[in-house]
Amino acid sequence: MPNSHRPQNIIMSTLEEVLSLRNCLSEYHVYHESGQNVSITPFMNRKKQFGYNKRKQSLREEAEVYEASHRQANEANSYFLHQPKHLFSNPPRVLRRGSDKDGEPICLVYSAPFWDHWNVQFKHNLNEIVDPRGMIPHENRSRGDNSIKGDGCAWKGYKVHSWRVWGKSGKAYHQRINARRKMRKEEGHKVVPAFEPSSAEEAIKLSWTFPFVRPRRYEFQYAGINFTWKGTRDLPVDEKFAKVLLPLNHLKLSATDPMGTQYFIALYSSAINLEKYGRLWVFDNMISKLLEESGSSQLDYYLQNAEEGTASQQESDIRRTRIYELVMATSMCMVLGEWKKASDTLSNATSASDRW
Image (cartoon, rainbow, N blue to C red; front, side, top):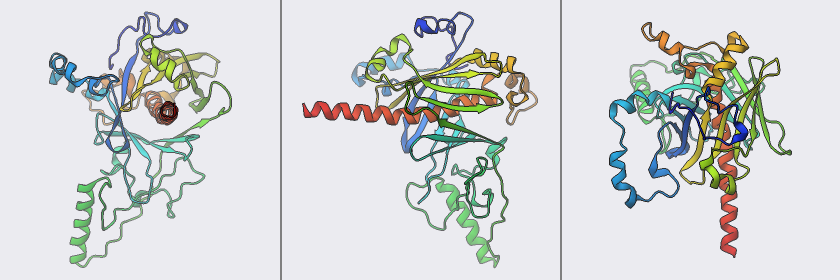
């Protein structure tokens, strides 16, 4: 587990039960990347930390470099939220396993214009559908008219144009497809891609259910379990400045099973930093407990591309469960929404100070 450890003295005493010695957590640092992408990693990037001083840190960095073997072994513990670029379109984001946009795709994340709801789509072996651009090919669109209204599992397809502008995703893929088209045209073949409709197997809608009450709430359901992202002020003791300066931009995730038992699943704290979104804590053992006590087949382990020799190892990895992937996906929805609110708050504060 990334940075899994006994979280003593990590979170305030109001979360005492969750932070007992029986509980372990995974800690992630969420950073901005170029092209509106998001990096979710267990490694702290000191150059992107608040108050970083390049001159003072230059000597320390040599002593803090991870060995290549250690970093490589933990690379799979990272996630990457990829935002593909397509002219005159807004394709969904792709949550990937790994540290860059070439990682294994986990799900597609659609956002509404005003952040009031999100749609997260899952499909087994999604990597066989998503092309190198990070998009669904046009021939794999769910409907002939390429609409998705009224069906949470439907997805749009995106064409590979004969021309390309700077900044669009998949340069090499674009060149390869057009070279193939040109070759077929020269051979006298008519280039008409076959329509092979596809759609997601599962779609989970995350909705802003109580926008005018305090604390605000985002809710979704999965396998008969109710999940709620809710505003909180219970933060790690080392996040005191974020608690004071951004009092309304921190969230916790709880799950309630059909018997009414509640589980504290995750905590997110926004950062006072233009290069970092914040920190995310996922309570692995609470997810394991939820899996054990729910008894739902929908929460079974999903072994993606599992080889015979590694299957047992992947089965013991909580990160390979659909529910863990859902926690990571919905947390990224929350991260993007809270960042927008936090950046607006800091911008307004800066403008006020300038007027004074």
